[in-house]
Length: 129
Image 1 (tube, one colour):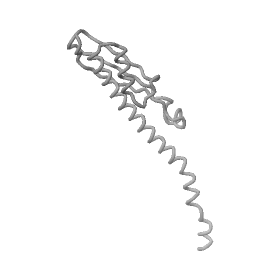
Image 2 (cartoon, rainbow, N blue to C red; image 1 turned 90 degrees about the horizontal axis):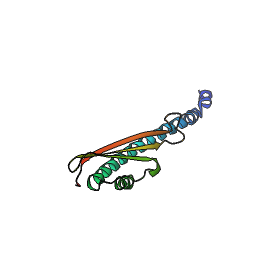
Image 3 (cartoon, one colour; image 1 turned 135 degrees about the vertical axis):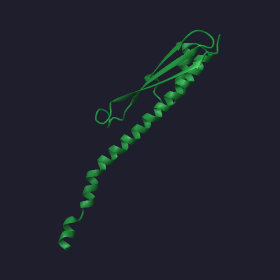
Image 4 (cartoon, helix red, strand yellow; image 1 turned 180 degrees about the vertical axis):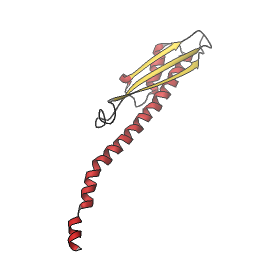
């Protein structure tokens, strides 16, 4: 029996060393999914802020500024904003926001695409005349 124990010695360390990279990649993928979910929530909030601004101000510049100010933590260069007004007071205004969320370089192209397209939209009633 002692010969078998000496032969098996260190096998747990070798198995752990083989599994560690896989576990770390899975952990990184899980964190990346969390980051993308957070970006999606921030983008939704930014579209609501833009729609609120569009309902009150009625200018593309004000909507764009409100969306970028509300998109805390997102790269402003990756955000695109489209505001659509229809009619006058009381008619709906719609703000569509798109964002290309980058993916961690270890996962990009292998487990996930290099970037993920996120979209959010919000509609509110116009308050200005």
